[in-house]
Length: 293
Image (cartoon, rainbow, N blue to C red; front, side, top):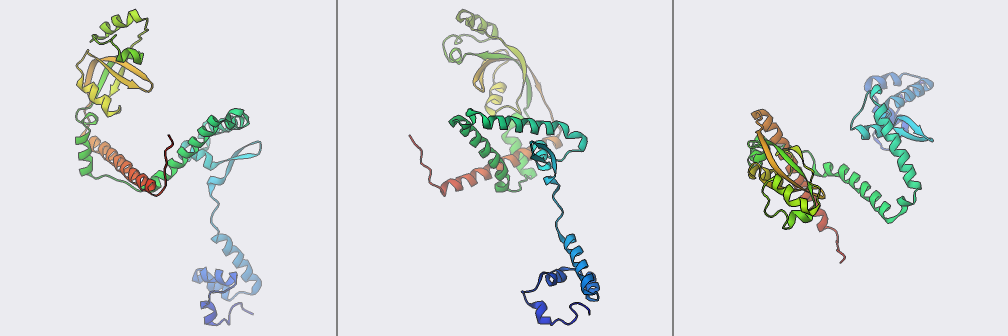
């Protein structure tokens, strides 16, 4: 006897139906028509095949690529390591990096340092940075900058565009105490600085390096563009203080198309920063923050 041949229309419109009936409703009309004329056993076969076809394909990111003492390393781990999928012959290096990091993390977990306040704080900071980097793009959303915003960005950052320079400097690190003290107060050139530092026993080793005004902090770019060639200037570099002098400048000219493309990217980055700052301000307004003295 054909299956589902005599079924009232009201039954099809009701919400409470067995799963085979719900599956039948979801089928394309041609498959449904074929089912209508099949026997029960054949209909069950068709239902099973249809159910398998409707199942979502297994995400390849969950595929196991290696195991360490039974703990799986998946395709998703490799994607996170490299930022994208790799061909089979390109996986060895990134996979080795994941394995080495897992081994070191396992060793750290067994070490007393991992359970110390410093170790717990470092682990918490790393986790928070990871989570923040994941959620920030979702908070900001899609961002793009038009040509007008790009031109405003060019006008606001001359050291990155129209006045961009590759500056060759001769510089080296010095003791911050000497940078702010009277030792170098009268020195104007590198030779005078060396002569002033020699009685203090300071070992002033300087080498030549290139400063690109487009890639350094704006304060340093403005300082480099302002200081006369050959004259001393100081700037911070991490925990060190650098002392140097400009030897040579080379203007770097870009094509208008390249300039506009870079400016769009820079303007979009500023928009993202502004949106994220606004979102963080709103988050702070919703929570109670008390600073301990």
